[in-house]
Every structure is written in structure tokens, then in C-alpha cells.
Amino acid sequence: MAKKTVATLQTSSKKLSKAIKMVKSPKSGAYIFQEKILPSDLVNDWLSKK
Image (cartoon, rainbow, N blue to C red; front, side):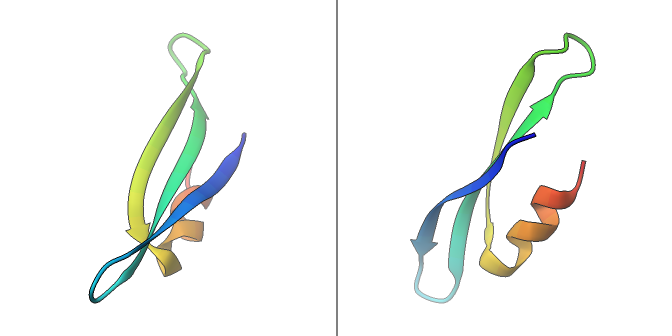
């Protein structure tokens, strides 16, 4: 499974990152990409979840 943080976004109060996670679909077996914008300190937690 590939995991990567691709961008760091700066707002007035918080530093945010856009994370992309590749997940295998249990139904079809194909890979799909999930994108989410999170605070930088929560990115590793989100990527480590299945």
C-alpha cells in the first residue's frame, strides 16, 4: 500500500497537509485513492489506519 503526503497548506491559524492513501477495494480488488486535508500532526495517524 502506498502512502504519501503530497502538499503542505498554510492557513492563518493552522498548518494543514493534504494526504493521499491508496486502498484496495474489498469488493472489486481494484485500488482507489482517498484524499484528506488534515492538521500536520494527525497525518501519520490517518495513514496508519486501515
